[in-house]
Length: 120
Image (cartoon, rainbow, N blue to C red; front, top):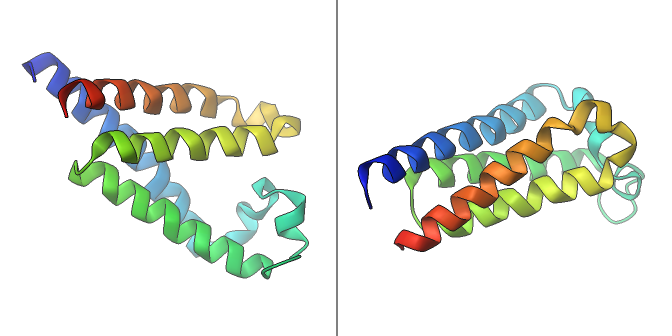
């Protein structure tokens, strides 16, 4: 992998990791700030209680953040990040004033998928 591409990959992984680690840790500290971004069917606790959804998703985000940092199967981690962000966007179209930045983050994850696939 050439030096510029390696540095670009590193910067993308750091940026994406920060997003998921921050959201996961913040959600564990105060879930009430994040529950509004969950789809209504999850908030209603149809299958699993809302607090359980929040805990599971926070753990997923933290795991994904760490996975991106350790650079193991980076294209898979970046694809998970991309799909997660797309899901957040699709289920929160009514909150686009808040989640519009996730479009950029999602495409950053997609760029990391492509960079990583080229060098795996």
